[in-house]
Length: 247
Image (cartoon, rainbow, N blue to C red; front, side, top):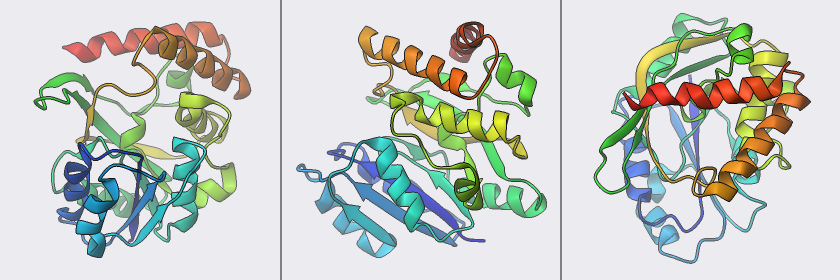
């Protein structure tokens, strides 16, 4: 089973090596690695060139943002399974992809797997929040639940069935895709009680009040588009659920 992993980057020299090495050091060997660069002008491309023999596809050109770049990666992917690892993030250990592959092989009828995520300090890797997920269903989504997007691995066929990432929802494009797949189309997914990703804090959706408000509005729009009832209540519960991640 081939697993395609997509990394999107733009001027991300600071942490890129850790991202790349966390993938190429995986115990699972049947990995197709795709990097989509937005036309970086720092040393990003020089770093990528150091690992070029491990990278199966590379595009470096201007794009319409993160999700446009991800969609380009999906179009290139030849793996049966697709996952995304952003350039600031790392796979938690060398066995993560092997355990993901085992999950799909042991449960051939499933469409997706997901797991747990740590938010870490960009300075010293200190764990600041732990997102422990669960086996969930449609009703959990109506209560504000969602899987941690960086841990989500999907069968490629789903993208042709249910569509790619929307380009008009800002930072809520991943939430919209999850609602579309899990809520509208009720895909079959299993939760692996496994720490999959370490993600540095400081993303574009939560860097300041303006970004937080924009993210809230886009999340609301995604909920409305996908017909989830009582979207304001769902959003409040979604935000409140993060409180428990701090201990």
